[in-house]
Length: 120
Image 1 (tube, helix red, strand yellow):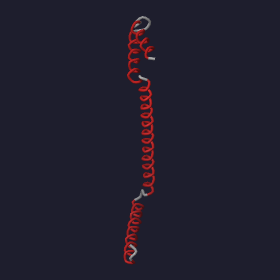
Image 2 (image 1 turned 90 degrees about the vertical axis):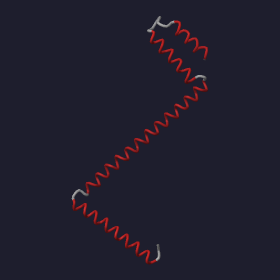
Image 3 (image 1 turned 135 degrees about the vertical axis):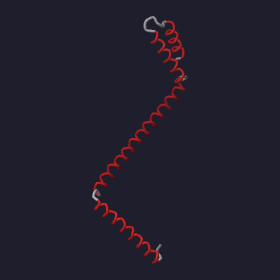
Image 4 (image 1 turned 45 degrees about the horizontal axis):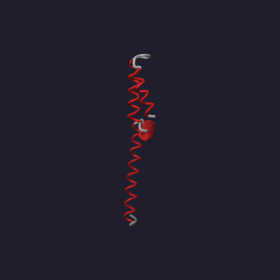
């Protein structure tokens, strides 16, 4: 394999500028060197491929998680907006506040009764 790549590189250097533009040969030689650096020897290439694959999967997972979180946030915002639309008028807002205060008051009374009875 190394011999084939070396012969191909020699052929590129020898025929540079004959059949195709010089830039084509330079790009082919650069691609060949990049391939040698990143994927040779074969074990290094396999490990690099595995790393690239793992990074790609992790990137896709992160993008997918980000999209899901963004959809959740937007859905929550829409739901909040819709719920707020139920309490548009000041009277309805006052009624909601009154209910909230009543719940708090009853909750406090319930807690005091439970303390008095010794159950808390």
